[in-house]
Length: 161
Image (cartoon, rainbow, N blue to C red; front, side):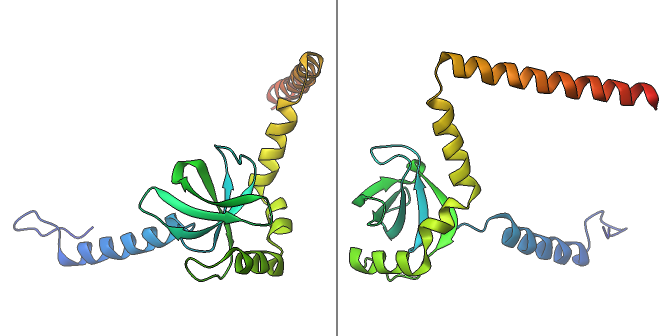
């Protein structure tokens, strides 16, 4: 940093560097914007586990969504009920369900969503929730045996070095 020797304030070069860094970080930090055509995953509510598309923004906390291919009717959802994905389709604001359906099928969004980490995480949660008592027990036993093997191997490597 460049410091002025007389008044103790930062020089002009420092402020220009700061503003450039702010612009770079602002660009890098967030890429999933809430916009028309953004594909979302519904986390909470009546249609949990389905995907939908943002058709319009109602206000800062509410979205008008539509999911004709996944069985989500056109409805208003709160922003905290959905997770935004990287997927986006090109639709006009407030378009009809027919247009949304055609764009979703043209872009093959369902297949692309199944390949995302969000989909895989949701599937894992579903399968874990379906486990019975004995299934949870077997899972716990397999985890402890795996951790025991890792722990013994790391101890051997520590002793040898």
